[in-house]
Length: 211
Image 1 (cartoon, rainbow, N blue to C red):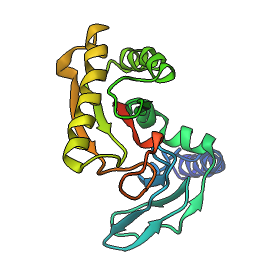
Image 2: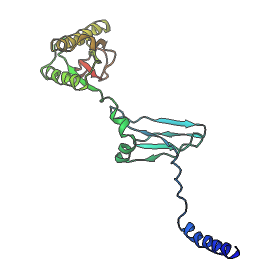
Image 3: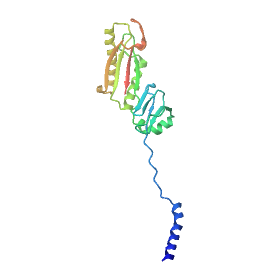
């Protein structure tokens, strides 16, 4: 019996190195979830600012393509860092693809004291309709403006006639009236600031926004 015990003990000792050579494989812990915020320019090319805050602290992003992140709910946000377009696409590509197309903006100009478009602006109406079709848009804003050559009341009425004239043309070319909002700013939103009674062709306009 003693001899058998010695052989069994020897066999067990012989197995130990083999056990050490083949340790139990452990599954690595999953990476901690990370939240990130990146600041991009808007549809008009402007870069604003955003404040990212939680229980651990806060940070403000003010530069285009800068990013901050946190790895835990109570961790302070990381200092802002600049990230490349490729990195933004890798991290946020799916979210960016889900965004609607940027709005399209058009400015049409009119003859002095008239609700008649000039020839160059009339040609832009085709591009307006194409933008509506491309975006499957149901939100088209049409705003009429004037210069300061008449009274505010007359200019408001003229701005509205201009906007309605453009809406009528778009309607005749197939754009549904329910997709359009028509209004006038008269001389209240001058593109070029002038005194009263100034003939400024750039202020005699209709602005169209297709969202």
